[in-house]
Figure 1 (cartoon, one colour):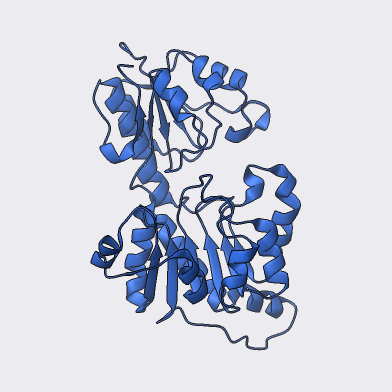
Figure 2 (tube, helix red, strand yellow):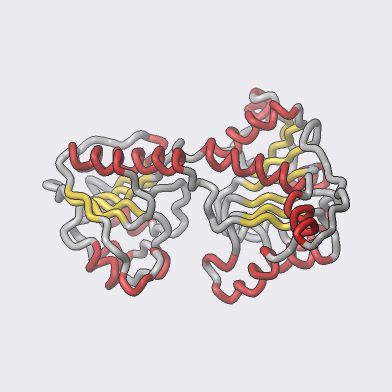
Length: 334
């Protein structure tokens, strides 16, 4: 695509002034429209998107469903720049076929999400929510919890966020187990960590944190059988994607005290509204610490990912390549 329109539409909230000024200084008109009918990005239809992106060469987006139908109705659009690192809602093949570029904000939120995981581990291990709720109700009895220090922590998936988490855990003198199909055992040992298979990860982890993409192979990787192999004192953390965990099975495990607790920033109900009753039961429990898919949402983390997303848009408009780690697909020249 040549003569890419110097207009970018931002449908994500919390887009900072510094990133706006960067785009404007590179000749872009920045449009930050209100979404129709108070919809979220994930509720936008192809017709909504066609209207919002009229005449735009770039789109900075979060969680919209970017289908072939959507991409076909925005012929001027050259780049879909995800302010985040997941892209399972993008039809990558369609983007390639239609000559689009799809990027992610690689490296922008690693530290932010890793910090959240550490916070969840400590809070759940020490039973902070349970203790505060008891105090509100007049019960000041001390609840004995568990340290993070010198515990065995399992990491499933070992991309940028998993590595950032491992770096932090070393300060707690933790034993760190890693299960990932993407690296060899030798590669994992080079990080000073212990490679293991998934069953060992389940059986030995005091804290288990998930950092894998959602694929057909990883969907419900933590199901009832997996939960049954974990320690009764174990804590599960999922800040990656709803669907990695079978939320019904997790709710049952918590009710039956099969595991001690869970930190959840993502839920199956995000993509399946029928699961909302399960989500509501989970987040109401004392041994669950929940957030609304907010792991990357600190001021610093958002500003970093905003700028990376903006830089990818400018690079494509200038006929250049975004950083290699950011490119999901580059359909130019197809």
